[in-house]
Image (cartoon, rainbow, N blue to C red; front, side, top):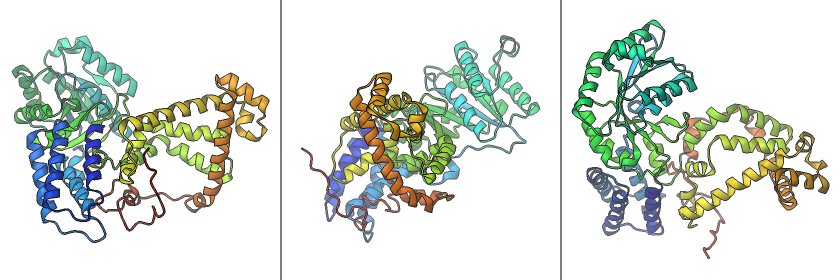
Length: 495
């Protein structure tokens, strides 16, 4: 996500590190590099001008904060203005405007064909269903039978009813606005508290499309009008947003395909252009790859500082019960190959090594420590870890239940059988056992610490202060010269 832009910002910050004073000349040079980075990211000139002017104004006029270097303060200014450009810190503005359950909320989804609008409708329905809502999906793209069929299939996958999919219904009503109105009446009678309308898409904005959407808008008066935008289109998102906002009136933005080669231009350009918040983002092809948008978290990720809070929320949603069971096992001291495999499976539920690595802001941390690791090196390292994990799982799964629960009974003969059964060499099994013993030793050392936190939950505030990207409060030990956490640490020199 925004890898190219993140890399450019890291280079800019690296050039500032070590400077005891940042004067106007240094600031102008850094701002010029920021401009170039944003141009390369396909950000609109209007957004670039707004952003760099505010950074310049703050950097020249702001007093130096005691305890941090001028370079760190410049990074903080960049972070603050990036947050502002992405929508600001008012969380209430970013959330969906959902009515009380007694009155159906109507969400009209807008967007061009190919932006991922139909899939986004299903993702939104799934998200709302998890929050205790009873959504109803409505197919309004009557000119594209494939879109209706797609919505039907997705609705079945997530267990959400789709209205308007039968030939009889479409032939009887004829017009999308009539189907929309009847769907709302159906929702009221059948206790659906949210109605999600999948409107027609076009390859480009045309008069016919806008006329159809205007009729629907005036007839049903939706609670939310969300514009679904492909993040891959860059600054063109500003033009798309302006067209829809001028004629229909957008209430929020949904950015899709952020897992692809998005450079950041769409996100930064569209908010500046139409002054409407990004409310939701799609981060992958799976239904669960969909989440609420937080400007502070996104800014932190763009700057390479990670997004620990989103990672924690993902963990709470996907592996909360697994963690509790794993924690109890560790307190009893029962660390074996079954729990070793359980830990790997939990990590797998959080996503790829690459995704977790970036959310933790590890790339940014290493750069701040003077350890240069380019994108290719990171990808190679993470890819090797993925392969290694798969090999370990294959070997553990080739063990008997007794062997997994009691690793002490493993012998050379058993190791040979495990190697043969998993398609690996004996030395691979021996290496796995050696690494397991090291892990067990570590877990034994951590046991007293884990007992201290038994039954306790970390608050969101505590997590924020732990975030590698919480540069707003300057809690990052890698940026705070007064921190003792890195005392005695000496980065390895690059060969």
